[in-house]
Amino acid sequence: MIRITVDGEPVQGRDGQTIAGVLVGAGRTAWRTSQTGDRGVFCGIGVCHDCLVTVNGVEGVRACRREAADGDRVEREVRA
Image (cartoon, rainbow, N blue to C red; front, side, top):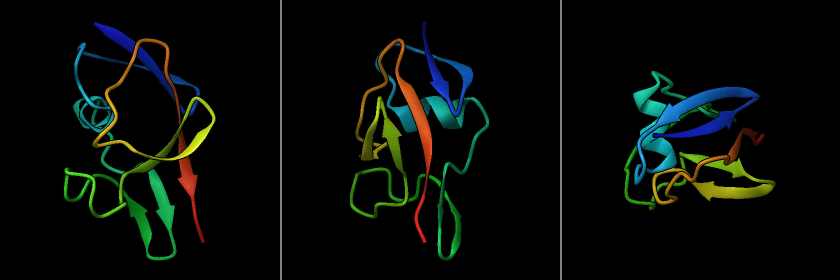
């Protein structure tokens, strides 16, 4: 098991899961806000940009492509 922090709250996942997998497994379906509303995982293969998050201070990380690592700090992105 791994533990990441999402917007300051601890979330557990399994080793080898993507960040999107950990978030969906924790019941979170949206983690980015855009002009059109809340977004989460859509395509799941890194093409659509709907799942962008900030990870450890790095903006624009595709949650569906990035493997979650124990201790990651994930933050919601807001883009207007």
